[in-house]
Length: 48
Image 1: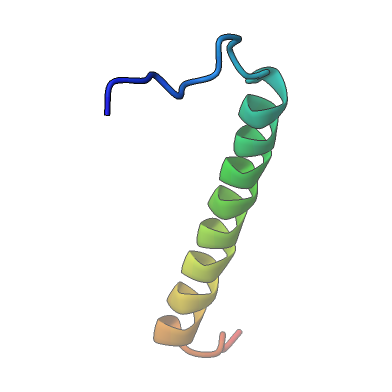
Image 2: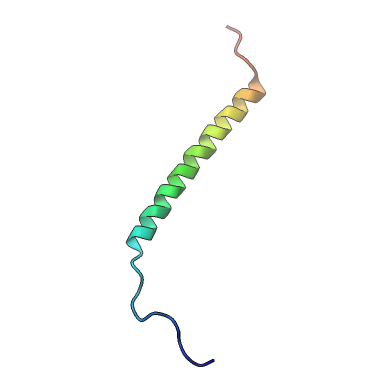
């Protein structure tokens, strides 16, 4: 195969970059919340 099938123009990456940044932020928040919950589970209930 000798033809180049890549499109001539570059795709609009601004929207993709923005969407990826939002997914990354959401994943970071998820990991933080899961970590806090795991630490709370390991620590047990507070006894004031």
